[in-house]
Length: 373
Length: 94
Image (cartoon, rainbow over all chains, first blue to last red; front, side):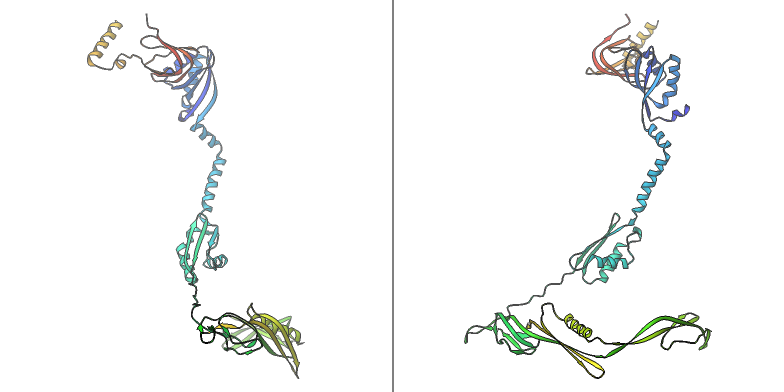
């Protein structure tokens, strides 16, 4: 009971029942006990508030005056402390929770990358990964200024970069270098010339005078549209503009032998082991090679050398001319611009003594006009 | 005899201009509107009922009539009451 003395911050509300409640209150007052909020319920019952540390004294007084005490309420810091003491597991949980959250907040869990137009965040993310910065790294091991410098150094097209840690996020903002646009002076007079050989199909000019017509054979560098306009005698220079659509030809020729030899591993192998000593091979394991054709691979493991022999089977495979043709055709197409329209495809396969001569001709239509420099 | 002693104390207090409530142990009553009353140097509660509270002092019991009484604080030599008061009466020794 005496341990109640140390609880100074607790207040208990109690209901006392006595024949003379005034006497009880007076006795408390005489004993120096502070009483608050006394309220009369009926003639014999009074509700009052006292401090928890005075409880022992009060119970003594109550015994003397034959008073019944019922505690109806309790509040204050002491009671919450007592409650927490009996729930140590919960307290431990709270401490654990806070410390885990704190510990996890010392890591970077996410990398956010903001770029502008041309650099993909994926590219940058891989680069940053290459620097050794990945989600799950401790914040103290991340040097944001170092990352900035590394990114700047390894990307020419980045003008400015900012890397900062915000919470558990590493934020990287990038501003790209923008090259100034090349300004083409459309005012200066000039001619249009052919950029390729071809046969003219159609001519459109918006400015200038065309000097070629349909069916003309054109060589590279020929003048197509002259930078002049106006009637005879009153000609003035202009910047020639227009399109000259011409038939162009692309040819691919390839000689292929009738058949090719392919080497295939059969999966069988044999290995020999030896030790090199003063330029002499001392075999630890040596066996005859039973294969007619084989690949020999040497492995060097510090002291013990290893030779592996793989059995090889050679096969004669006849060449498929159609396949080769298709290959040549796709090779030609790969080098063409997207604006080029393909109109025809001529294939020619000639079989000679020991080889095929395969010729593929692609006929296309495209704009061959380009500005003279 | 005691009467004489207190009268002497009173004159001395008067002469020396000491606060009389401290020297003579007189009750100091502060009333705030009709709902709070504060009495210092009281001598205990005599009656605590629904419509009457009687508090003992050196100048005799003081009765407070009204309703909804509540003793806000009692301790040391101060008592604070609250409620709706109707009248405060000095009962006196006589």
